[in-house]
Length: 225
Image (tube, rainbow, N blue to C red):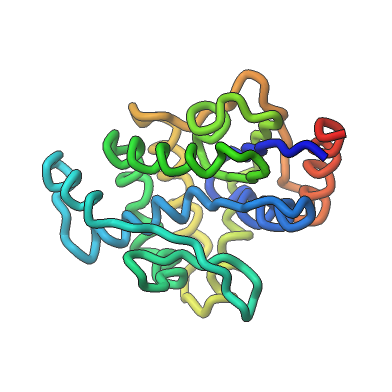
């Protein structure tokens, strides 16, 4: 059976990551959370007080960064490791969420991660989610999906995710953060969030995760077969 690359793009909180994880498992593909990679760099920036307006400082920081994904035996998900340390919980906190779009907009950061992501996809059999996967990282991906959802649906999902991790946040704060990230992601100069011309739109506002997965799985199997 031939293998393909699957690109899932869309706004923050649209269910991309959860859907991509399950989809990859069903296809026995590699799952790559590109957003987690940007979050890891954002965490490094925060912890090391990197001056984002200083190109040399950013480039020096990138040379000091190694990002890995390792299987967590307890939940069977890949955790993110930054320079050998598990930072899966840290990168999901609000202080990182609040700055990740700012860090992601930096040209040197995007070039650094896009190169790593493209290397992963060379052998095919990859499900990757993010903002520029279908347009920049995998422009030749056999299946591209652009996932959309209302701001209300996305905020509710993010609230549930964060509460499950014991984080105290309110719905209005999440909604404002999502709206801010939508604007930053869509208007940034480097690889802005946009739908690839050949991507398939899926509105997930009223879909369960299972329904999202089923829709995309059927699309993938049509191509594979």
